[in-house]
Amino acid sequence: MEQDDPIATRHMGFLYKNGENGLLQNRAKALELWHRAGELGSAEAYYNIGNSYRFGVEVDMKKATYYWEQAAIKGDAIARFNLGATERNAGNIDRALKHFLIAVKSGEVGSLKIIKRMYKIGQATKDDYAKALRLHQEYLDEVKSNQRDEAAAFNVDWEYYGSAV
Image 1 (cartoon, rainbow, N blue to C red):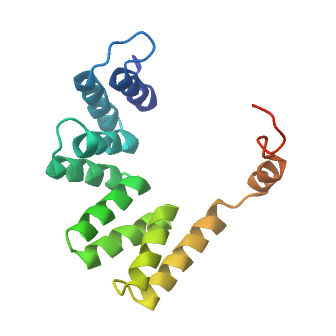
Image 2 (cartoon, rainbow, N blue to C red):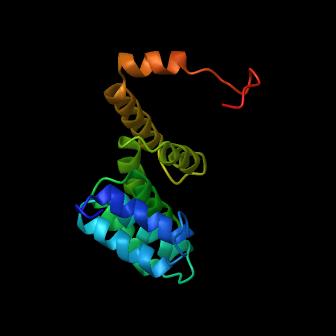
């Protein structure tokens, strides 16, 4: 954190938020650190700030939306999903769909599920849903690798075997 590492700064924010590792819980300090991490380039830090304003002590949807927008601009797919949900809840279906499609393109599966639901209830077209499926497949093709396949094949369901790994 002393070297202005955005990941370390964001993590320290979580420690203050939760009062962990000997630190007293201090949500104001957590927000301060997340702001710093965001300035250092952390999209996830802006996402955390947005969540703090949406689900925290001081609920402010305008601020939550602003910080989710900052995170989404930097590529955070879950923030993009949240923007889609916010727009959908406000009745802005076209805007919601655009956010969800961008999130799907980034691999956010929840957005694909929402678009499917929107299609089923008439808020999205068959073409919209087909586009979402194509974007999701493109994402999967992009991240596919032999190393991932080997790791997935190696991954064993330890609970099935009774181990408490």
